[in-house]
Each structure stands twice: as structure tokens, then as C-alpha cells.
Image (cartoon, rainbow, N blue to C red; front, top):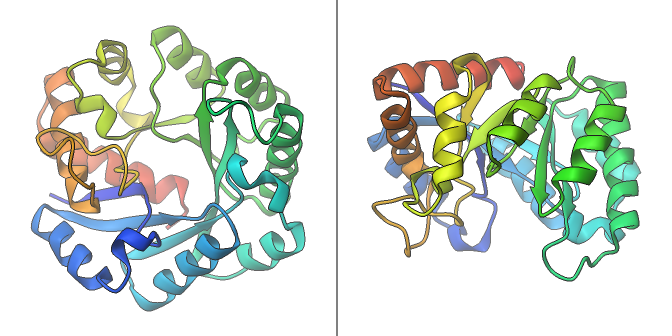
Length: 253
């Protein structure tokens, strides 16, 4: 079995100086490739450095909505031309913490990055927290279906799942899908077509069962695969195969 963690943060301080250890841990649970996700200047640079030094790692670069005021378009354009960079992300909207930066700033920076993704035919990884309505409208108005759009750590219900599937999105599930108190996410995972499905950890965040409450790591993508397999009533090997192939497709690997 081969598993692809499509969204993880080995560029985070939690993993500093231990990259090889966590890659080895991941291989023990059949997680053999990872996308290292940027979010600001520092994390983008570190994602690229890791991808340049480890063959199984691939970099995404972009400005998370939390860092929208720091957005540097020239830097983004230069970085996405590097061979190790396979997409733009994570970008999006986050209205959870008192909407700061302001929604209009977040939306403007998101659209600018999406325009670059379209110009350079790069897939994007979307962060969306408490902002489904605005996100849906922006994605509908700025079609990136040919480049590829990943809804990272999807936690919506069936209604939102179907709306985003209709826009041609890839739907990625994190450890949240294993939480006992997330029945809507369970139902969405069950109903996500295998050819639009991805898995991730978002490590060091959102640790899946049975390690919820502890720091997350890419190895635990295996438990995301197991949870989805349970809801779909198919084998983990089937989930791993489809999501691995889907990751290669969306990231053009």
C-alpha cells in the first residue's frame, strides 16, 4: 500500500531538525509521499528547501489568509517556477478569529493568487474556515477546474460537498474524518467519489484517532485512510490506491 499525505507541515517548528525521522515514521505506515504546504514567506522558503533535499517531498507555496497583509506577488511568481513547487497553497478565507485580516483583504489576496494559478496552470490548496458562502462564490466566479482545486481538510455537510464537487473540486479529508463527533464529515466522506478523493494530516494539527490529543505527524495519514475505508465499506488498500493516484494527478507528478 502507498499513501500520499497531500497537505502537511513538515516545515513547521514542531518538526525542525527531525525531518528524516518523520519521513521514516511515515514509511512504516505506508505513507511514502507528502506535499509540504506553505503559508507565508518563512514557511514557503522552508517548504521549498525540504522538497529540494528529500525526493518524496513536494512543495506548495502561498499566503494563508492569516498572512494576507504580507502577500508578495513577485515572490510567489518566482517560487512557483521552481521544479520542486507543485502548487499554490494554502490560500483561502478564514473568518474564525474575528475576521482579521478583514474579509475584503482576504478575498482580494485569494483572488490574486488564484489568478496566478490560472495563468501558470498550477493547482491550489484551499483553506476555508467559517467562510463557505464567500468561498463558493469566489470559486464559482474564478474557474480553476482545469488547473485543479483542492478543498483542504473538508469539514462540510453533504450540501456543501455536492456544491463543491459540481465546481470540479478535489475533496481532501484530514484527521477530523476520524473524530466521533463529526457525523457530517463522516457522511461527506462516504459520499465523495473515489476519483475526487484525497487524504491528508495537516500535521502537526488535527491528529486523527487513535492519537487525538497528541501531536500529529504525516505517518498518521494511515488512520485517515482507515476511517474513510470504514465509512465507504471498502478496503484501506483501495482508498490508498485511489487517493495516491489522485494526488499524482492533481499535482502533475
